[in-house]
Image: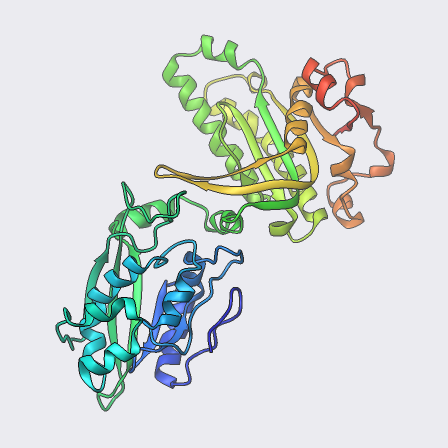
Length: 411
């Protein structure tokens, strides 16, 4: 029957396979389940989120009801942005799993040739029957993105390891096989990476794997007199100060439901999309909460660094964009979310003009607040005094040039 992008995958009709599918889903496994004849009966959301369609959507299409190595499976896979999206990768997977598939195919090799895609038929002759309880193997390029030119690439990338585990009932009848995948990195490495990260934040980042335009609140902050501090402190101490400041800023942004942007020296960039905040008002509120919490945390950072409380002063610029282009950038070294557009540049201009540790917020941002969120922040938008940016004595030349007409207030 097939399951299209972002459609829910129904549980298998076999009760035992349904229990396995539920367990795999509840524990966040990347798992594919086939029945005793190697027809797909379930694919977990986590697996589908890895093999997303190029056409968009959070969950990729899967060929439920079709033989795992049929022409339909290969056709659906050709539309994925990641994973088994080329014939060569399907051939590699078939070579690895084919011994199990052959063992489960009534009629042997001749019957299997009629079930698989023609591009895989010659591989059937290479297969050796394997009917063990489990099988583990490595996929050199499975789950990896295609190169910009469309060709699959594995240079310098971590391959995947897959496990195939047989599912049998109390009478020993083969009900199906569950396939699970993970990077070849040991669990000690994967666990350390996960434990050092905020999982909610990672999930918010994943919402923007496919770049697009979204309404959002934007926060920029930067440390004043950073050059003076750098000259007055030993290099190691200044580095430690910067690390403490970045960690504190990230915590404030994450706790307020935002997405941490690039770390630019001692500057802070964060995004609060309505998409992940729940509403435009919630996004605006989260942006203001993060700025206030960070400002209130500066004294503790200074104290831990052996500095007077007033040694750390951050400028804050908060703004709203209706149509900000945002997306995740993943390379061999890191993943981050970044955003582009006039409203992002305007936020930077507002921040540069917020001297003296002020929080300057645009009217566009403040007016996104619903009454209950404004009240929770102790803000009355109707009583705030807004000033054009170019009327501020502290406005920079770039602010007067690029964002002169933006009305801002001090929070």
